[in-house]
Image 1 (cartoon, rainbow, N blue to C red):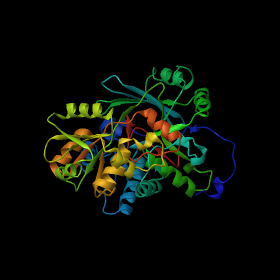
Image 2: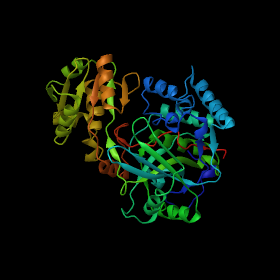
Image 3: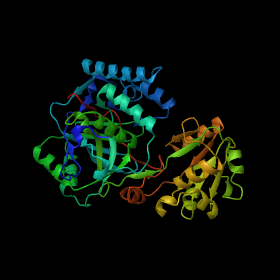
Image 4: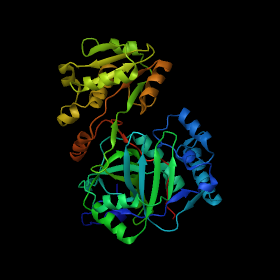
Length: 430
């Protein structure tokens, strides 16, 4: 739905990344920059992770992105008041001039990821500039929209990728030159990842980035619900307004390939013995007396041949489930989608296993989506549900489907490393 302010016909445009005055923590007002950061809101494992982050520093960003109160209205009002107070007290201060930000993440395994943070013009779906690859849940979009309205801020960047030409020219060269300078901030978070941030304010540098991005489209790697939220809020506000843009990190994956990991499922009300019993005759089921790393290796091997899943629960062992009955798939998987979509593990899990075999509704009361493999296993064994461990999808498959306009089942992939929340915010009144 568009307001009148968005209905004008415009010439086709590419990605437009706009400088903004970043809102950042004053290092002298907090225990450490690492202690006030957080993973993105949907990666925090509540309540354990939430309380752990809250105790790390009284100003941790989770008090804004995941406020705690009795009702949604009270949570959002609390976040807005906390943000107002932190700005008034100088805990969060605005950079003096608008700019983009080069952001680097480096881990102990040798992975280096660099990209550019800025305020991206929120495009319409028919412009085909920002491609989603997963469906969203309306109640989560509504929740994030309520929080953004209350705070009048983009509290954390979502992660977008594009494909440059793979050379060290243009934006890639600018990023690498910038990374040779002294950073605006540097910190190492609890997970061992090193983070550095540099401002880009020179008009010539900004022009290089603007020109290159105008020829590209982006894939949403992480943040589908936040992008849908940006689009909803843009439609609500007559243009031009600060809601015409949303905070993003753009990474050129030709230069800095992301890691793609699976997101696992925890089925709350389904004991693993019951889940396995229902698979008799329609999937091959094998018990694996192996520790988690070797069991995941076995899953990866099986996934090369057919759809495959690793199940565990309160029995304390792993069960490899693969080779589904083709006739079952023909009956249960929708036939009106591309073959690449029909053969996804996530498609078979949702269309065949959850909907048809186990009859588990896809709602928070029945299914939790967890990024961490060991945490999924631990929760299933402790709580008595069934952990369904997944093998990741290759980025090329994700991009191919997105370019065809086909969305995958939600939470099918986890691209990373994800940007840390709390390093730079965008307040819409700046």
